[in-house]
Length: 175
Image 1 (tube, rainbow, N blue to C red):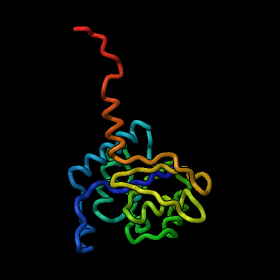
Image 2: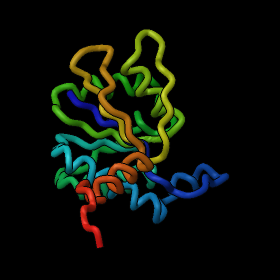
Image 3: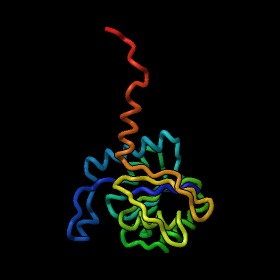
Image 4: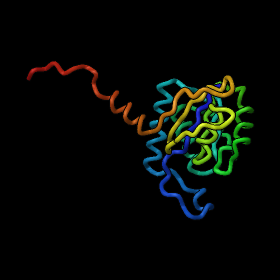
């Protein structure tokens, strides 16, 4: 199974009230980050068998925007296992239930999402990994511990697309 772990895209400043913060939507930059991630996944020709998300608005919006852009037409599964209150044990159990799928996208939050990723790739103690907003990791979960294949954030993707947009041919004109 290829497990894609995506931290929700930019959603502005955290709110003091947990109830209000749970309803915080993506901002303009966050929506652009979702499109960058989707372009990257489309370039790799990734087709998701399942997308699961935290119930918080910003994670659901990220999952929905990316899912729409990569032509995912099934319902997004909502799970508390990748919410801010999720635990490593709950996350591990969730990953085990998804083992029948080939490509799965999980959308969640800091600070537990990097911890979950670390628990997949490094046993018995989890690795310490930094995931910026909109970062996506691909883990090959064929065996345990899993193998981290890639970890990209939107800044890297912007740089890749900017360099790819420039012509690779040398300017030979002498005018």
